Length: 96
Image (cartoon, rainbow, N blue to C red; front, side, top):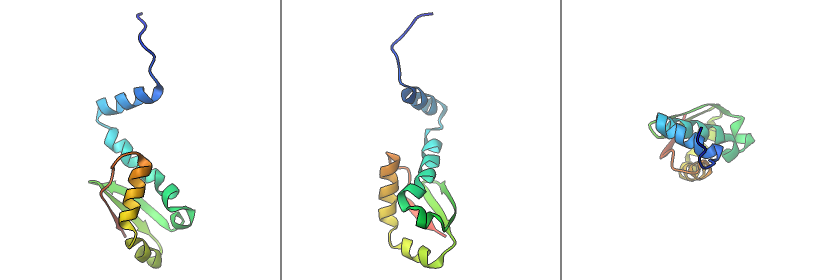
C-alpha cells in the first residue's frame, strides 16, 4: 500500500460532502443548529420549528410579540447566521 500526504479529517469530510452533493444540505442543517447560538436561549425558548427551503429560513415562534420584533431584525439575523455558518447559506428569513 502506497502512502500519500496526510490530510486532516476536516478536508476528508469536505471532499466527501462535495463529491456526494450533500454539502449544501449539510450547510443548511448546520445553520438550523446554530440558530440558538445566534439568537440566544431566551428567543430560542419560543422557537417551535425551523427549516430551510430554497435558501429561505422558516422559523415558527409561539410568541406573537416576539414574531413582530424579529420581523424588524430579519436582515441582521440573515447576516449573523451566514457569518456564523461561514458562508452564505440563506438569503431571507420568514417568521411564522
